[in-house]
Image (cartoon, rainbow, N blue to C red):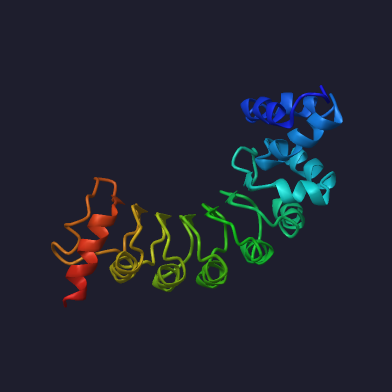
Length: 246
C-alpha cells in the first residue's frame, strides 16, 4: 500500500469521504494512508451524540484542528439540555479553517461562541437557529469579524432592525438569511437589507409580524403564503433602484 502513488490514494480516499467508519479503518492500514485519510476524516466529522463530541474534543491534535472545515451538531439528540458550549468552545478556539458551523438549538452562550470563532476568517455559514440569548450585541460582534459570510440563520433570535442594519453593512456578500420568528424586525430593516446586499437571493421572514410594507412596496419580490421571500439579484437590484430614487 505504501508503494501506491499519493494521487491514487487521494482518489480512493475522496471516493470514501462520506464513509467515516471506513476512513477510520484506513488510518490503521499504513502510514501513507493515514496521512492521506486524516484530512478527509476530520474535514466534516460525524458527531451524533454529546458523548462523541466530548471524546472528539479530547483526542484532537494541532494537525486535526487545521483539517476541520465543518462542524454540524444538529444531529445530537437533546442538544438543548447538554452543556455543549463548554466543550465546543475549546474546539473552536483552536480551529482556524472553519467554513461551516451549525449549532441549531444547542445549549450554549452565543457571546462566548462568537468570541471563539472571531479568528475564523474563512467562515461562510453560521446557524444559531433557536439558540437562546442571540441579541443585537451578539449579531454585531459576529458580523464585524466575518465580512465574507454567505449564509446566516438566526431565526427566533431576540433582535431588532439594528441587527439587520449591521448584517447589511458588514456582510455585502450575503446570499441567504433566515430571520424567521424575529418579531421585532420591521420593514425598515428589510428595505435596507435589499439595498445593501446585492447578492441576496433568499430571505426567510416567516412569523416576522412587525414587517408591514407599504402597499405594493415589495411587489418586485416573489412571496409565498407563509411569508418566505425568495429573491434573486435582479429583483434586489430593482428594489434598490426604486428606493434610491425616493
